[in-house]
Length: 247
Picture 1 (tube, rainbow, N blue to C red):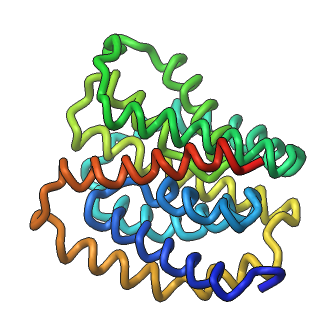
Picture 2 (picture 1 turned 90 degrees about the vertical axis):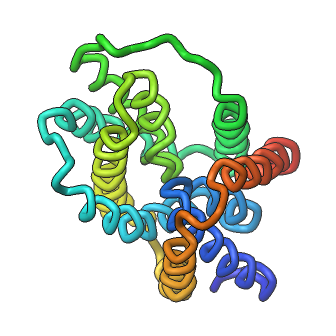
C-alpha cells in the first residue's frame, strides 16, 4: 500500500464505512465525509479516484431506484456541461500541487458545511434557462474532475432552482454518476489510477457494503436534522484542519 502506515489503513477503512453509513442514512455526502479523512494521509489524486470509484457504486444504486422519476430532458444541459468541465478539473488534479489541492478542498469543505449549517436564503433561480444550467454543469464537472466532489455545486443549484426535493435528487444524483463515470474514464486514460489505488479500493469494498447496509437499516429511525448537524460540524472541523495544516 505504498508508504501508508497501519494506522492510515485503519483510518481509511473506518472513513469508508462512516462515509457509506452517512450516505445510506441521509442520502448524501459520501465524498465529503471520505475526503475529510482521507486527505490527511492520501494524495488528492488518489482521494479523488477513490471517491469516484466508490461513488459510482453508492450513487449508482440510488439512481437505479430513482430511474422512473428522472426527467431526461432536464439533465441534458448538466450532462453537456459536465462533459466540458470534467477534463478541465481532471487536468487541474494532475498538474496542481498536492498542497494547493488540499488547501482548496479544505476551503470547499468549510464553505459547504457552513452553508449546510446556516442554510441561508439564497435568491431564487426558478426562471433560469438551460444555458445557465449548462454553465453550472461545467462548474460541477470541473469540481468533480479535480476533487471527486461531483455533487456540491449541483445540490446548491437545485435548491435555488426551487425544485421539490424528490426532483432535486432526480437531477443531482444521475448527473453525479455521469460525472463520476467521465472522471473515472479520464483518470484511467491518463494513468492517474495506479495499483495502490486499486488495492485500496478493493480493501474498502467490505466497509462500503457494511456502512451502506447499516445506514439503510437506520434510515428513518434517527433524527435526520440532528444527525446532519453533527456530521456537518465534524466536517467543518476537518475542513479547517486541512486549511490550517494541509500545506
